[in-house]
Amino acid sequence: PGENWIFSARVNDSYDWSEWVNSSSTQITDTVFPQWTNNATNANSSFPKYGEVIQLNVTLSDNVALKNFTLTVNQNGVINNTNRTISGTSYIMSENITVTSPQGITNRWNVTFYDSIGNVNATDTFTFVTVNSSPQWLSNKTNATTSTPKFADVIQINLTITSNVNLKN
Image (cartoon, rainbow, N blue to C red; front, side, top):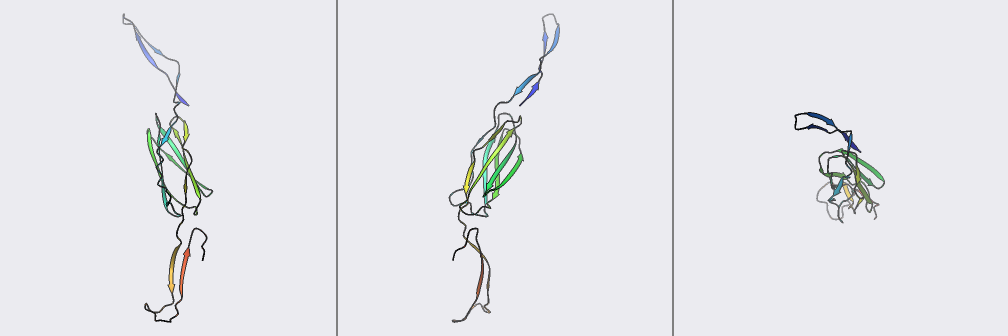
């Protein structure tokens, strides 16, 4: 990929004669692929859990100009692509995603990015593991008619418990 340029020059001799000269078409080619550095994702051994937001970061750069990128995230076989148009010679890609895969799943992500001439590059494929999530409870209901039941009163308690993994007794 490249651009065609024509260069012009004016030639002047010592007798004040001058002439414009055009070059033939010259193709200017950018052969330097865009680069990436600094994977700064905030995942660790205790984060993220199901339903939490994780931030994926990587720095993209090019010697001429960046054009766009696609962030691809694979969570438990569900692939989500995020496309963004960018500009400049350096860009910190920072995208927040919600973790939707269950405990123990290794999730994968990478970024494919282009410079303004069409050169393409991709980051390594990075991973993060969804860690254990504690079961959640809601809808605490009882049949108690008073807030201070007496000894030997029978009280029925109903809880709704949810988990992103199988519940055990």
